[in-house]
Length: 55
Image (cartoon, rainbow, N blue to C red; front, side):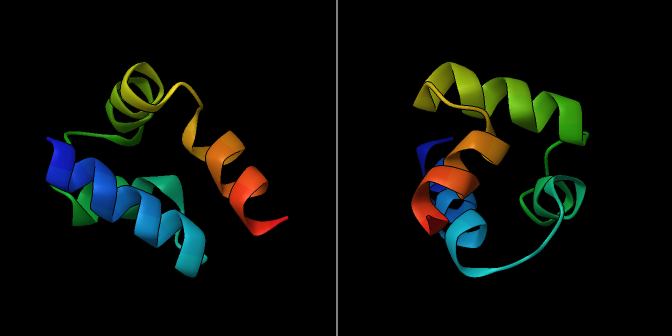
């Protein structure tokens, strides 16, 4: 799971892929589940993380 989240962070920082596309790329069942797991482990939603890291 940590490898998936590390890759998710990289994709959020370096691409304009949608959350659903990132979820699919990382083999999560759907975008909502990906967002839930990401927020639980990282403390921010994927959108919040993308906005913080690209600003």
